[in-house]
Image (cartoon, rainbow, N blue to C red):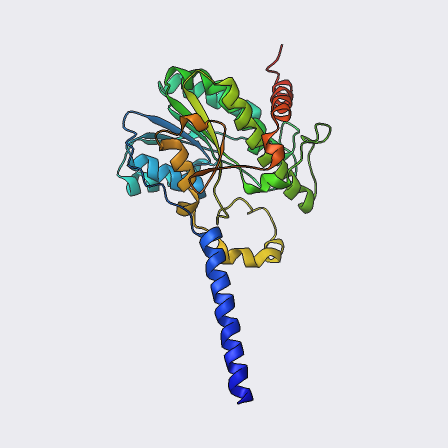
Length: 319
């Protein structure tokens, strides 16, 4: 009888763990799908980092809707391979590659000039690319700060007139729930980091910067018919942490149980790029295709304005 009781308790424990896993997987691993069928024929979409992961999955979906999709990628060979895949999967031949290295502000400026000279339209800009690594860029800034925030800030600035001319248009900025752990210290925010742990903190800081960028940008775009949205894609299996040693990732091995694939992770980006009637929510934070209240510091209007002015000064955009 004792053995039967022990087996029963073991079974109940296993059932409890299975139920807990199912509950966590439902909330963390399963993304709400974007279910609208909005056509993008005649529209041009620009996606940074569209050669892999969330960006590539987003590109496939928007190409299927008939958009002309421009992939802004650093690696030519990988970009060309992605263009081939996206054309094949979407049945849309209007998918092209343009080279952009967000680790170089000169590359951002050259890219914007080339884009404006070759592409008459820009209807949707998706600031998707990101890195999770330490070190510094060729411009002397922290990698995550420049690639995730500053270079996208500059790119958006340089393309804003074209977005206004093609209005109604949209800007989607990929952030992360990691913004909750971010801090904006203007004395050290842009300084390069040289270790694993500080690289992770820099990533969180840059994701908070993405949130504040979207918030201030929405204010400055009022009345232009250009709207913007910050997006958390969920915990997604991507290549963003490829520069980290394998052993560091196994320290959080349990996260792998709840991880989303790239298609699931792309759903909120697709939603914010296409969903009709969300214009009044410009500047808001979206998770699982719904507006969500972010951390208190991501709602700080004074901090958002100060970050905007700080970014402008670093880029020489102020007189």
